[in-house]
Amino acid sequence: MERWRYAVTPMIENTKPMKLSNQSLQASAVAEHVQVPQYDRTQTGIGIVHFGPGAFHRAHQAVYTEDAMSQFGGNWGICGVSLRSSSARDTLAEQDFLYTLATLDRVKKLQVIGAMKEILVSKDQTPDIFDRLVSQDTKLVSLTITEKGYCLNAEGRLDLNHDDIKHDLANPTAPVSAVGFIAIGLVKRFKAAVPAFNVLSCDNVADNGTKLRQAVLDFIEQYAPDALAWATDSVAFPNSMVDSITPKTEDYTVEEVSGQLNVTDQWPIQREAFTQWVIEDNWQGERPAWDKVGVVFTNDVHGFEKAKLRLLNCLHSTLAYAGRLADFETVYEVTSDKSFSQFIRKLAQQEVIGSFEAPSELNVEEYSEQIIERFLNPEIRHLLAQIAWDGSQKLQMRLVPIIKDNVALGRDTALLSTGLVAWFEFIRRAVKAEQEIVDPLASTFTSTPAIVSDDLAEAVDAFLSIESVFDDEFRALSGVRKQLIDGLTKLSTLNADEIGPYLETL
Ligand code: CS2
Image 1 (cartoon, rainbow, N blue to C red):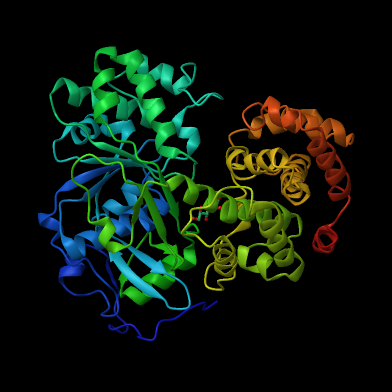
Image 2: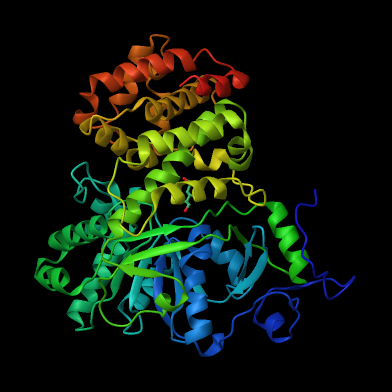
């Protein structure tokens, strides 16, 4: 299916395309309508180590860094670090770590990104990773590893009983966690009298920098207490909010981008045009000229974080679970359905806006409507099934806090509870159908019979008993518990084409 074509047809007709590489760039084999790095990659040093060089990092932070270097220079090449898989390294190494960002929106754009200079994999390159972490050239360590990678306990402190943390404290020459690598790397710098680097979380987590700082300092307190005062005073952990809808790369993306590029890119990244990065203005020393390419440095990141998590991610997750129960495939399809679009607008207007204090410079009504317009981008095929991954991690930030805040404020929670109930029913149907569940708690769901009980109060209580998602305060919300039981009682009886009409009744 031909989904999108550019105005310019491929420059080279009927020849086998070269691979995207430094060589094909220098040979100008890449089509003329494609933006390419405006700096000499061979002369650009590495100043950033990034843990988790996945699609979002490559679509967001790496692109801001690319633009900053193309327009303002600087040795801000990125060393990606993969703690699990070697696929990104093995694939991108074949094309000199170049890849294409395909911006798919009303206006389409192809940009070859050169900021990624290397990707190291911890299973066989740990010494090289530490060399990068200790190098004076490294001014920043950033992360997109999701909150579960921070190894925190319910109190927001480092979980010293976490298998990875226990391993790293016992094996500091071969850590397996990002927290371990960062903490041990900082201690090495302390002992070598090398100034600290900044640590920047780019995860979809409220207070991401504050949480990561606590985890790293807790690790150092156990591992090298003599370095704790230095780390406490010398390392900046700014909070940040990140935003750009970045669906995973599909086979058609590779085919279509390579066709437009005139060279083969094995792993392009697709993304919407909208992108936003808000970083707390808490920084030691140099940084890329991000502020000159659209990044906002402010002291009120918290308000932007909440606005985004609550007005985008809460709606995303609600659409994912309710939409999958209604057999929709993508965000575009489900948001195009009148019943669903009316529901999420009511959810935003009646139960999300007003649940938090937004930054004074943000018009939340306009922001919310802009988000729903972004969901209606026909060029982005964002799978609901992908957004549905890791619900036990995501909903504790996207839905649970809003319900708690609304109860405390005496506000309604019926629509928010519907989103939570949709997750419950989504999991129940997957367990009954023995379908794969992508979630760190998948085994909990499949090994807890009450989750799929026909006694829906028992089923709700089984979900609410999951300590990592719901705390005692939430379990004590008796009114919410009744909403969840009533909602699941209704939702569990509905087939796909009855979900939308049901939402209209709420
Ligand atoms: C999505 C996010 O997959 C998901 O959970 O809600 O990745 C969302 O696309 C980004 O936060 C948008 O910035």
